[in-house]
Amino acid sequence: MPLPLLPRSSLHFAARELARLLRRCSSLKQLLQVHSFILTRGLLLQEDGALLGDLIGAASSLGFSDYAYLIFTHKAYPSTRLSNAIINSLSQGGSPRDAVLEFGRIRASGLQPDSYSFPFVLRAAARLPGIEPGRQVHCQAIGAGFDCDVHVATALVQFYSASGRISNARRAFDEMSSSGFLPLWNAMIAGLVRAGEANSAAEVFETMPARNVITWTTLIAGFSQLNRPKEAVEIFHRMQLEGPKPDEITMSALLSACAELGALELGEWARGYIGRSRLNWTIPLNNALIDMYSKSGKVDEAVRVFEGMKRKNIISWTTMIAGLSLNGMGKEALDMFNRMQQDQVLPNDITFIAVLSGCCHSGLVQTGFQVFEIMRSRYSMEPKIEHYGCMIDLLGRGGHLREAEDMLRSMPHKANAAIWGSLLAAARTHGDTGLAERALERLAELEPENSGNFALLSNLYAGLGRWKDAGMVRKVLRDMGTKKKRGWSSIELNGEVCEFMAEDGSHVQSGIIYEVLLKINGQLKVVGDVKEEGNDKFD
Image 1 (spheres, one colour):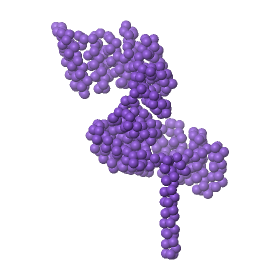
Image 2 (cartoon, rainbow, N blue to C red):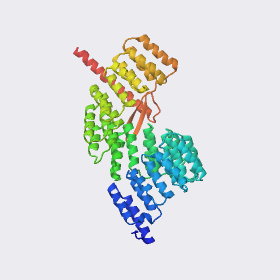
Image 3 (cartoon, one colour):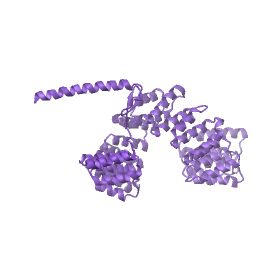
Image 4 (spheres, rainbow, N blue to C red):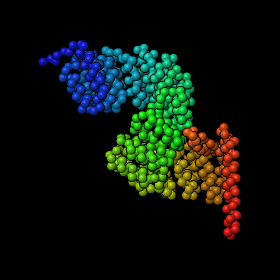
């Protein structure tokens, strides 16, 4: 018996309510219940495909891409709207290639792609190797007249940025920037940050017709990720004066900058601000707080935050393990790793780097080998160059120089400067001039401008009394015209981070600073003279 048809007004009301219900589904069971209700009332047969698209979208957002595709293949009538829904689903899931193929079937079905089709398929193309699939989509967008659509232009900027073609992204942006479409400007800033062009991102930021919280957060996070945390903090302070209220993602970016600076005072202010503003303590926000406390040396507080989390993900565990390792608490890091395994949380590549680093800082050579073996035997993970680097560093620090060099030469990766640098440092520590010379030879090829490597070898020769050899290395440095990079230190005062270099007079209060330093030196000299006089009397 055919299902009774609902009146059009009732049909539209039911479709709206069911669409709202689908957006609230949080499990497969709930999704199946709504799907069953729709089927038994014949609603999919009586409307234009919008409800079916909502059903596909709900299945996709919950991570059930296969189920979403199964729904799509049983559609009664093809439409661009339904094709868009499945392309979007496939582009977000594990089948970006299938998303591109489905896009090609739109025209084959006698349909025309619209302003939603192109952004969805470009997102999929960005996840594929090579630029050709996305370039072909771009050509089709031009042919269909959609290259002047701001949504398509935004997707093109994102695609070319993700593909490493920042000049193409900039061209697509420049053609449509006059529209003032905020997502387009935000996409360009994010693309420049991804390409490591922070200054260019800041220039685009300054010329924007308007900004939102995403704009500010993208720039703050970008400077932090590009190892310019002080500028990230400065942008945040400016946001407080000029911009919108920070959200959870903004505060996470700020905490990351504080972690890199060791700005504990500012980090704790950020924690208080999050509480006062009643922001949600999301997992990423807690992870950033753990990282900040760990890198600021307050490991106990980092552990308290970790233990107080109701829900944790692999990043939470890895961040805590890395924090313990960084502070020389290798055994505690291993205990945390064992707890993680007992909780049946699968470690990833970065987790093992954190654990091996803990072994390194604590000199746990045998344990390091056991962890290295677990990667293969228990988790079927092939060690990457970073894992070999940790093991070689571990062996070198422990004085097992021959074993470290053997591992370097037998590993299935070409050794990088970091690995040869760790061998050079180990050779200097343990007085192995032969290994130091071999390491320096490689480093001279890999990073010829790094004078620190030559300085290490010179210091090794000097420590062994080989002054002629030490002098020769210094002469090589002079002949190369290489200058040693000056190290810098920082101090946090009243929420502001001040940076200093040796013989640095750029600070506005440098005169007062040097005056205080001279007084301290004078007082230390007086104390030293008194102690020396006391020792003479004792003698």
